[in-house]
Image 1 (cartoon, rainbow, N blue to C red):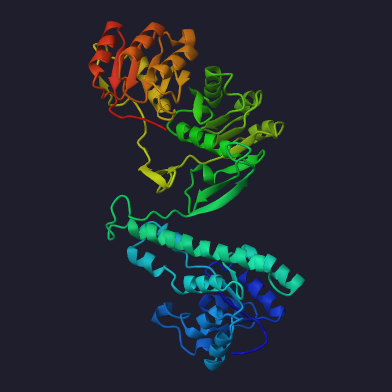
Image 2: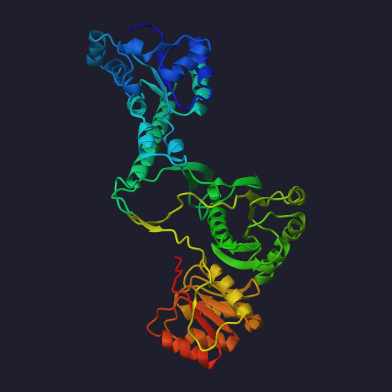
Length: 517
């Protein structure tokens, strides 16, 4: 097949606008070759198309598993126009040049997302010919235009009309996108098979391949001198902040996203109406009540200074009454499952406030936590078991009262999401003091108790890890704390228990530590 017209090979699973694109190429003098359903769609659209089998002289076989894997296809893609020996091989073997490859791959992710999908079904949706053509054309991008995303159709046509060809810069960009497309595809396959019972790869496979897509470019990172972007997990589940929708306000910043994640993960711990205010990745105020408004007022009163310019997460719809109170101060972000129409009207007068809706759903396959370190990646399971005081062991002479149990249950949920070393003081569904990120536990306790002030009297205290010494108990007793919840497990637990008994403080052990670094 040697002719002056340029040739485009089109074979796509995502057929968005593909017929229209094929038609536009045809109008510009291109010949189209295609396979299977794509060829039929183009033909039905009224445009001329040759099937790959007409080019190869070989029928599709093995139920479609083999159709494009042929020298007359891959030779046409891989041949370099600047090499005479390549040109000779093409002539000797009657192979025509292919100038554009438009391919995207079998919907593997969609297949494995179906409930009850079998291993055999998944394997049948592993594309072989598609990635081979994409990689071949991406390798030979100087001579072949490769398109894997329908969003590029319009810009490619525009360049063809303007310059008669596609620039080297665009070809290179499309090549990078193509290799990323196949890399992501292979990552999903590798991950799926590694986690299948048949593979028996263990909890942590030998290689870890993580597909992420750029969700947005950010103005800067943690600081103005740092460039940044936000990447979302490919195939992410609903219920994550990456799947949230922004209703108004400026684009989220690097720190906004980090703080929003901290707020959202904490507010999900509560079944009752709850409002969490976060500043610099730590909760500065948490309130739980019968209504969103009352919960917000508790969160605000917990630390009216730090909440200014903070991130607020709510686990219920935000109504007009809460919106009016929230709008009295500057808040960077307010996230909730939904906002009432009346609430949205209130916030229109505060266009700088970013509003986010995030469904309160369980995330599918949300299993791993990653921390980047120099030269590597730390990987651990997410501690997804809800925090709480249920089943905690009473280790002191006095048991907590009903009100103290409720407060201990509230505080331990909060302290799980505070940076270590962490101490939380609170009562009646409200934090009164938060000590976060300290080098020693007594330091965190002093900060939390000082912030609570006189309100600490009659309140309870939660610790993310055990007390290495009884000094925290003594500090708590001096402030009027009546009950303490902590994991236990220190060699000096008995000394802390003894100190609690001396001051008539009830103490319970959960056996579950919540370090957060």
